[in-house]
Length: 127
Image 1 (cartoon, helix red, strand yellow):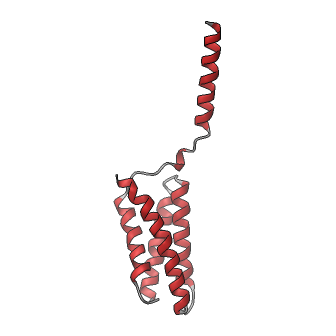
Image 2 (cartoon, helix red, strand yellow; image 1 turned 30 degrees about the vertical axis):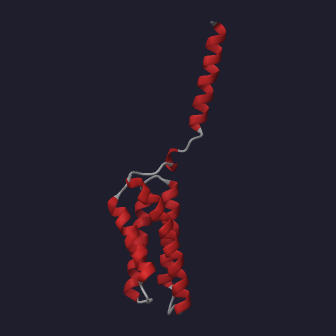
Image 3 (cartoon, one colour; image 1 turned 120 degrees about the horizontal axis):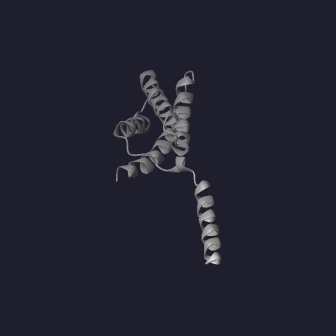
């Protein structure tokens, strides 16, 4: 019986130690339709627009900042990291004075790729 108590104590300690190393902020948040809509709008703007018109760049930057600020309150490092990247790309594009067509297209492609990845991951949360 003594051996059983020792074995059970050791096993319980191992289980607890394993749980301590698990990061709960790596779990996906619940699906948020408003967040997802902003993400999709930013994706559509970056993907389908043909110009580098100031109103479009301002809207992209605005949406990126909303997502970044939103994610900072979710306590989810993965989401925050993705939205920080998206916001940074949109801000860089907007801050550029008289961006060339090539620069604009490249930045938009980068934003599209980042938002496509986010849509793929975050869209799965609705299931």
